[in-house]
Amino acid sequence: MPHPDKVRHHPSVKWLGPMIHEPNLWHLNRRSVSLAFFIGVFTAFVPLPGQMVIAALAAIVIRANLPLAVSLVWITNPVTMPAFFYLAYKLGTVLLDIKPSPFSFELSWHWVQFELVYKWKPLVVGCTIMGMFFGLLSAATIHTLWRIHTIRRWRKRKRDRANRK
Image (tube, rainbow, N blue to C red; front, side, top):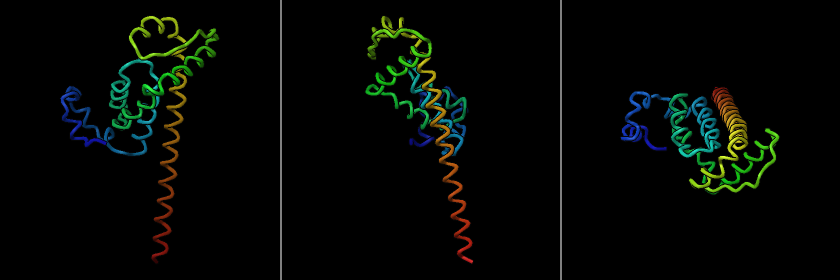
């Protein structure tokens, strides 16, 4: 992770002022990491450009780990994005009971202008449902694993203390 001071003093984030100095934006604790997983995974399913900016703003507002939230957005990248958005579109057509039309995804302004106009509703519904599901699943998984790890460390310390006596 980048050093917090380096990010805090970067010209592109100076406009955030004191908000960028919130400790949870930079610390790794169960709450900030779980929230970062939710934000990053949910935002990865947002079918808009600027997912990293959206994740960063959400992390700042919610006080989640900023670098982690922004980096998790890359779950959907130019290689994986077509598959994820196709599945989201299919899910949306099923949930909205719409007959699916042939779907091809391409990361271009032309596709957004001429194809997305006809497919936006099932795509948005599918992306929202998938983002919520996988975001909540990842946050709950991280929260639970972190808790299990902490409990095991407490028990190990207790055993070690008992063995020293």
